[in-house]
Image (cartoon, rainbow over all chains, first blue to last red; front, side, top):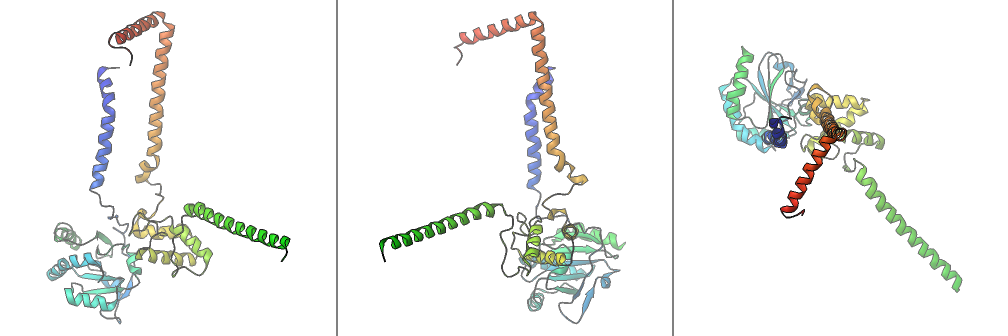
Length: 180
Length: 185
């Protein structure tokens, strides 16, 4: 056995330690709450819901075909939505693409009051009282935001609040590419 | 009341009480043993379905699925609103006659493999499934090689008296040195 190999043998536990420490260190920066959505690059699920503002109006998945659009799941009881809301209001002003709200497990009165109070960035909000459409979209923690292309395919999903950085670095370039 | 009768009644009472204590004890024991093993013990009264067998089936299935809202709980254990909704969804799907596998597929299509407590065998889970076995095999291999080398050294020492003598002389020398330096402590 060569002397080099012999000394390496004693260093082996140290290498193993570094390997394990490396994995654990990486784990520190992973968010277990962010679960990759299986919907990415798959057709958005079918839905047909009443509009929050007008129970007589029904909105269908087909209504949104031909447009790149954002679906933003929100609720009046959701604290993080409040934090996210001004960003969406600002984004809606630039009117790059329509934002459709998914009012998730809320009441009409609370939802409407919330929009009146904080502003309404949505072209309309789908009223998902039972949360069934939310389940079909794999919503598990509002706010969640989906970017859906002209063919109705989900291209991007954000779990948690949309931030200005995320909009400029990720969502806007993607919109440009999808609109091209 | 004459003496023997009273005695008999007392005896009966005592037996009755003993039986009751025994029953209570057995009940506690059963609760401790089965309560700890049964995965499905937490359920809510208001939303239990009508058919207890179907409900049991649903809870068994839900016990193998992860709640997305409180990620270290199963859908069966969790009281998060989403877990309640998903249990209802599972209940309905099962009532429609869908198999356990179809229900799992329904949830995987929406939330990904993360909902399954038993990870499926896929290309990206190969390491997870076979990693421990590979590590064990490598360890066994290393052990085998080490033992073989040691055996070979022993053999050569035994078959070659000169080497054996040299080795024992060296051992003797080392021992003496040790004694000189303060003994074997």
